[in-house]
Amino acid sequence: MKTIAIIAHDGKKPEMVQFLNESKEVLDSKQINLIATGTTGSKTEAAGYKVDKLLSGPLGGDAQIAARIAEGLVDMVIFFRDPLDKHPHEPDIFMLMRLCDVHDVPLATNPATARLLIKGLE
Ligand SMILES: O=C(CO)COP(=O)(O)O
Image (cartoon, rainbow, N blue to C red; front, top):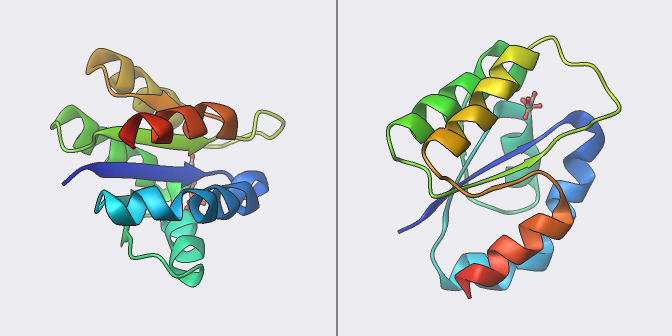
């Protein structure tokens, strides 16, 4: 079973829910396991998906996902960042993205790229 980490900054959470709804068929048919930072996870649950929720991003959620990436437990990361906002936990965000590159884990930071990655699962 593949695990996809999903993370969205506040301004991007509606796009994340929309993206999940678009991708529902593939996610269901491939029995994808979702993990998410706290608030993204709550929105994902509210949209009807089963998800393993970690801490909220500013409280260490990005760092938790980064650790799972380092341990080889994450197959793909979909992280809709808001490039127009400031984030107090910027170092954690960079760490997560850096570890995707270190461990060659596919990382999508916008819906257009995420759609291509999901297509790759079909
Ligand atoms: O801050 C985040 C990613 O850097 C997302 O965290 P939440 O999903 O808890 O809002």
